[in-house]
Image (cartoon, rainbow, N blue to C red; front, side, top):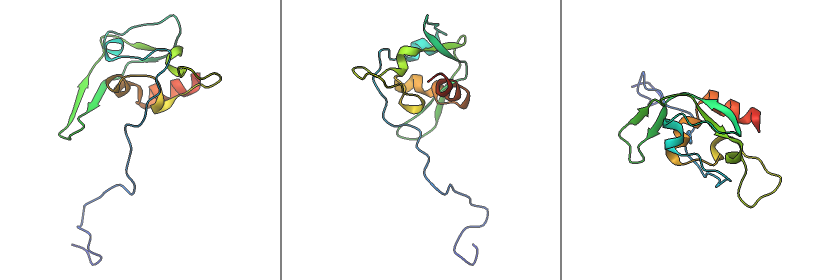
Length: 116
C-alpha cells in the first residue's frame, strides 16, 4: 500500500470504457450468420475479417469466433429506417449484438467511418 492509499502495482482506467450502446435499425441488419459465413453484398462498403468477440453481459469472459472468410458490411446497414439524409457509422451501425462483436474492431470501424 502506498502513502496515498493505493495498492502498489494496481492500475485501473481513469474512465469507464463503453463497449456496447444503442444500435440503429437500418435498411439491413447485419447478423452473426452474415459475419461467420463471410457473406458478401452487392452494396458492400467495408470488409472485415477479425474475430467476432462477444463479451458475456453477466461477466465471466469473452467468446472469440473466427469467421470462415472476410465479410462485407452493406451500405444499407448505415442507413437508418425511416430517416432521410442520415448515414451512421461506429457503434450505432445496424447489426445484431453478436455481429457488432466483429464490427467494433479498429480496422472495421475505420473502414465504416471512411465509407460513411
